[in-house]
Image 1 (cartoon, helix red, strand yellow):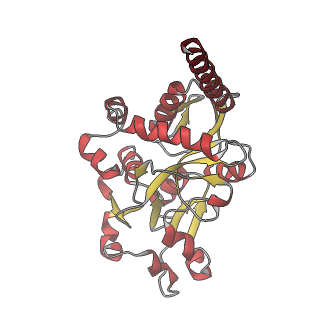
Image 2 (cartoon, rainbow, N blue to C red):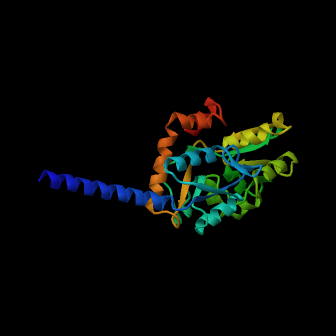
Image 3 (cartoon, rainbow, N blue to C red):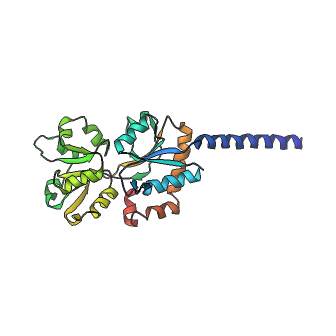
Length: 269
């Protein structure tokens, strides 16, 4: 009887171990295909290499699961398109949108990243109480630059069906192009998806003392998005739960401190 129970335990343990290994193999059977857009300090391609906080975090998650990641340099609008068609496996640090949930899994949020506008300080009175809905008024003559394919918050998403609002926008393929338009005064303001990106652009400019950023919302969480064509829901949950656990570790905070101060990190929680 004892031998039979021992045998039963060994067989059960072997089945569980085999199932776990099979699951791990399925999850990591090939490198995850992930694209990188122009959103430093979160992600960017510099000197032919992917760099930024999102890259560091995803690499740690992949390492914990014994998986590998293959990165590609793509504009943001193309990233969403390729994810929709199953050509990318994971999209890092994006908003949860209803139409995206048709082709991707979302779970716990990654970071809180409120959107902002950047303006010339001399124009502060014109934007002191700025709301996106101001751009639905034809009498408003402001031109606002943004990035093609970006959805800055839910209000922006809903307003994109309003032609008057759209007419106020000047959409470009990169934040750097939008920023140059602001410096050249081709637009009155630029929309950016979070404070960190705004800070980086402002600090890199010779005109940083003439510029000001204004948040347009208090909370707008970003997520890691998992293609339904690449992962089962269980597989995607495993990756995201590993991400969530890692973000609570001291190592994750140390990674973030490479890019932000402790005060700035409070914004993202």
